[in-house]
Amino acid sequence: MLLVPTYLAPSAVHGIGVFAAAPIPKGTLMWEFVEGIDYILSDQQVAKMPTHAQEFVLEYGYYCPHFPGGLVMSSDNSRYINHCDTPNTENSTAKAYALRDIAAHEEITCDYMDLSEQYIELPYVRTGTR
Picture 1 (cartoon, rainbow, N blue to C red):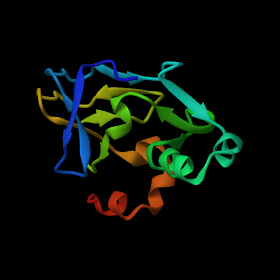
Picture 2: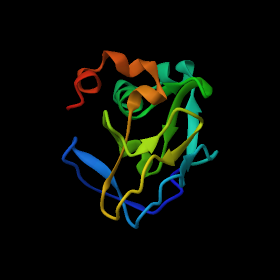
Picture 3: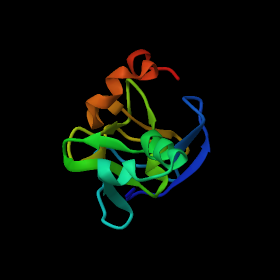
Picture 4: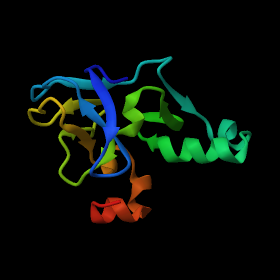
């Protein structure tokens, strides 16, 4: 769950992005897993879903070694955080922190590779563009 105020808006990176609603100082804890907002779907649960639901889960969920057992899904704005090769968040642990000061109205980005190796195969992660 995002622990800082955010909003969604069109992104220069890709589609919709998450933007800081207020300045976020470097080192601020920005996201942590909160049961009820964030959840893990097992592969068996996903397999039982209709195709369109599976596509949604695979678009917005991710496998992460910090949260074993399936795909991590978030029901807040964090699912819209876009990839960047030079992100403003640090996501290599089970929590996410501001890597540097983030200005109000600046897009919040992360390096998808910090979350999961599943993104190696996505061309926009390898190239930094979508």
